[in-house]
Image (cartoon, rainbow, N blue to C red; front, side, top):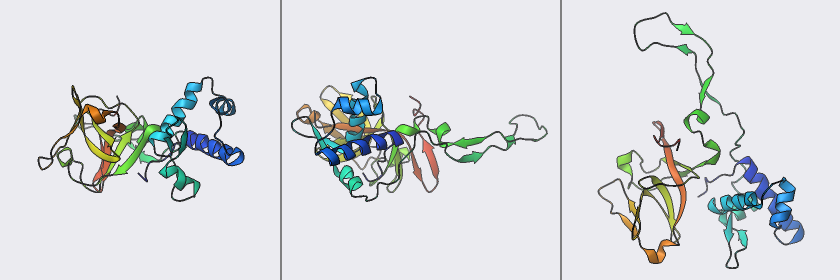
Length: 227
């Protein structure tokens, strides 16, 4: 999951707790973190920590504490984690140069009407990240091996396409919530559905909701990415 990047605020949060741990040999308390960032509620600390766990920078220990996970260790070592998505960045885009009619012929109207940018395509851009797809189980949805699937840190509803982590393995499938657990449906007849039964249900984690994908032919968005 090398492409799971942090937003600017998440990066500042992560760097603060790393620096505190380096200086004090213990992680900061929730109160110390809240005071440093002027958070009004400890819930803000909890949400930031959950995001870092979900993105693979922290992991929970058996005593409900946390420690560095794989990406956290890479970040600490300065390998491949310098870039990040700034949720307040103004992204470049495609210039809108005027108006063209789709009815009767009319005089061309040229004007600088701004740009079409990623924020317009993906309103939740600050909560998105990409993973590279390996395999063809979702080819009937247009997602192929080598594509970059765009995921949002959001709830996956019944029938949505989502990225699932279970038993240390990941899979991109259409997710259905059955009475017996989860049913992960492929979009390719060559693959079979994956059933996650109750005895392993608690080991399953949704790591992202599908909102689109990117390949050499363009950017494709889900019709439901505004939900």
